[in-house]
Image (cartoon, rainbow, N blue to C red; front, side, top):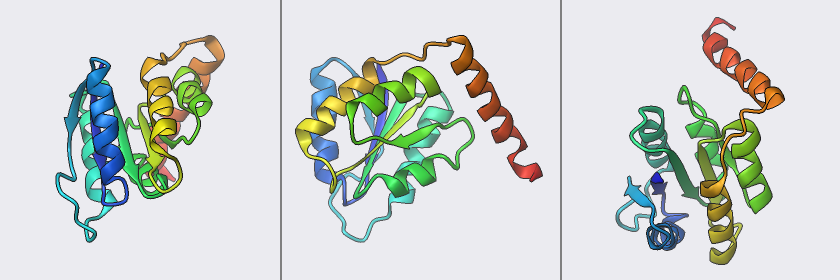
Length: 152
């Protein structure tokens, strides 16, 4: 799988570890930054870069890491076509893909440790959207809401 990954200073160290783990598992990883530790950087810059890679189909999915994962999720979901969520457990990570076609995983480096992050990442990248009737129906409703969002 081809993945984009990004992190601000809060997720910088965990991003390096997850990138290596993914590459060791045979995935292609596009690192959109941060490329150096800078306590003054801002998560929206990196989350929007990850989301852009996914939205433009340059990668299959994305991973964004910040302190809590919340800011990364908020920014990512502002981009049309993105379905991002904070996941701090492996069930949510695979279920989010299987049922909701989640395409960006957000994690908080200040919330989980590296081994848990690996497990969550493995669950995310190995999951596939089921396309099952009720899941497809719900995703279609989400897409309509996304298309109508400026008409509210």
